[in-house]
Image 1: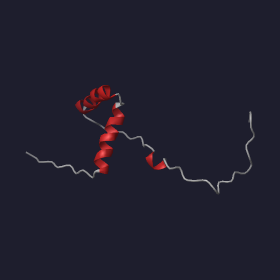
Image 2: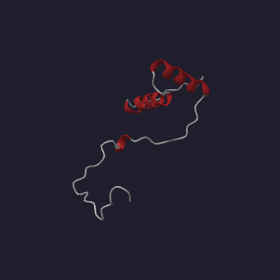
Image 3: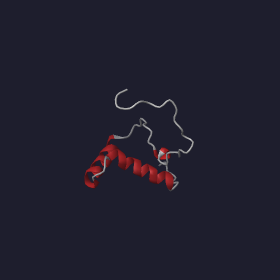
Image 4: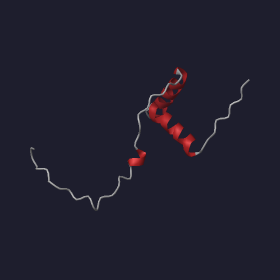
Length: 74
């Protein structure tokens, strides 16, 4: 190795868990209507936030507020 040699043994006894590990993002594939994506893309231009981040913020708000979808079939 260049620069520095690897140690044979590392001591992790005083290590702490990563506090951000629970906040890691998971990549998923989701199908959304074109008009829904366009809505968030337009909003992202106005707000200066990437549209995928806006979608994530809306979904996270629904999850943290335990919002329930109420549908009425006509």
